[in-house]
Image (cartoon, rainbow, N blue to C red; front, side):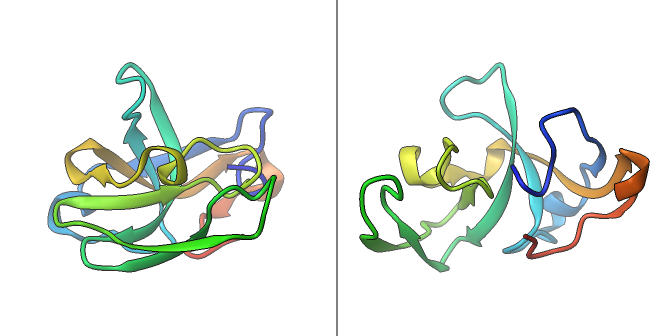
Length: 122
């Protein structure tokens, strides 16, 4: 999630209520159980929910070719902020909504960055 979250160990607060009531949307930072390794929780930016059209660069390291997908019912589309080094929906496709674990809303550490995690950053 560079540059939004640091490699040195940002501490964030996340809540597990909003997503149960459909109160998450594009731009939110979410914690999702990895579809590739169910033992891991990954932090990604929510780019689309069911019915949304999402346009993305297929392989940013090799070309600028874009594709547009419509997120299927019961799924979300997630992407990391560091498009050149992120395993996300561009690699494994839409993620079942049931794997959505929490919504991040506040950075606690480091103190210089203390405050809300804004929607739609970077």
